[in-house]
Image 1: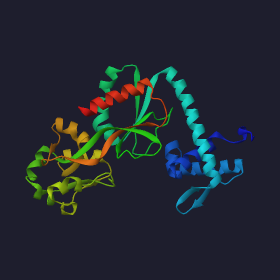
Image 2 (image 1 turned 135 degrees about the vertical axis):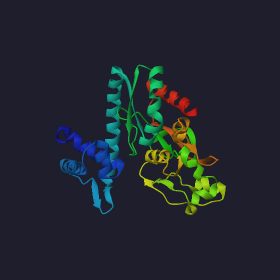
Image 3 (image 1 turned 30 degrees about the vertical axis):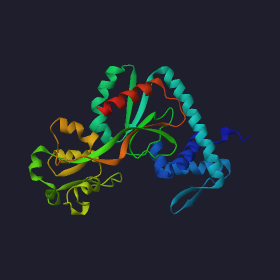
Image 4 (image 1 turned 90 degrees about the vertical axis):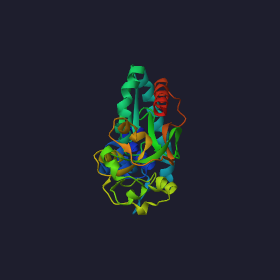
Length: 293
């Protein structure tokens, strides 16, 4: 058996991350280093093991047959290491890391974490607000709260709440939207690269199509879109959960009546095949109750 002291753990970790996430950039983002550093670690691992793990193609890094076999063992090994670390950490404190999209953190979760802290003062919650597709892993990220269709591979996903959408705007802007026809002339706020749903979800039941809408500002994040709508810059098609607090505070109002279902929901995502610790269960139960209010 080859002496593992001759192979750097950082190099093996880089190989596992590239194999699991598919690209150097995704692996670099997950490990908090540069793509160049990941590339060098992969080359080092190949040199130390004496095999070619990846084919370099114009479309990216593709595992060789031996690379696939080695990567599967590495993933199992790192998951076992993380489980061991999580056992040690659980003896120190009941803490958990929750990965969420920035918009959900800003518009819903952060406002309510104080409620959870009062119920469970001994549980410390760390929020990792990231737009990246993070995988929950024992000892790293305990759970993810995702919005989507729940079809993610390699995880256990439990649906929390299906989502409806409806148009919102600032109270002072509402007078510019007296009826459906007004949507063809007023500014429409859009989120760039939103692949989960489009305006047709709301427009089709009303006998309209998205190509009939007016132009308007485009933002990279739904949180910015909601802020722009609150500032009176136009009408935005919002998820019910994300717009709730702004409506309660009088910052937004429904621009027109009617809320229609989408194919997406909020999901509680955990590592597959891992027993749920008591503090994660406590957070899960609180989250489900709070989102259902």
